[in-house]
Image (cartoon, rainbow, N blue to C red; front, side, top):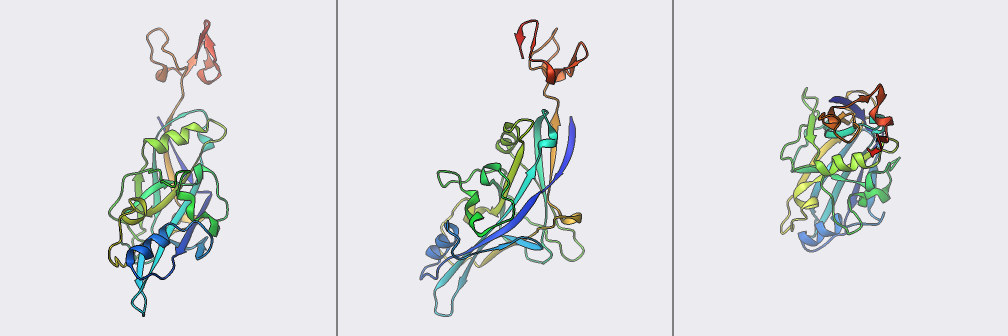
Length: 253
């Protein structure tokens, strides 16, 4: 097994501010479900955010804010190897803000979004307006504050690994979204003003603040057992790399 570190190529936060509503539930639903650029703003560098917020207005109404952060990784350097495990390491933003559970989800069908735009808010939704989870939920977040670098590492699930492998040697890529778990991913009803549940996220393109993936991978192997040796343990046959063998003695790989 080999382990490769891959840094994010693109990054950014999109914030959607919903309309003022008389009920907290309506305010949050309006913020979470926004699929247009109206009311959206972006953060492309520095300190981004993920999370959920309901704010009471002076008139007694409510307004919702939804924060989503995205990272894109080009993992084509893994080549033809089989990816067996992936973990993501995200650095917290440089503030003491750390509140609310969170989760990693699939974003943008794993394509590069380039420079973050207001229209990227809804990248977390698939064609059926549902989200695809790439991790379990996490209840703690470490900010980059008070001498703490703010390292947050989470294991990605089998769905993420499968999608990373599906591109093949020439097109492996992964795009992830960081969101609030309870109110954004699980879409739990906001029956009351839950306040500010926001985690700061570093959006650095260089240095120690960069988001990264740790990818564990192994040689793809011939794909068939040979002389009772399992395929995963075969690297070469008669001096030829298994990646270059399509069949052996008429048996397809």
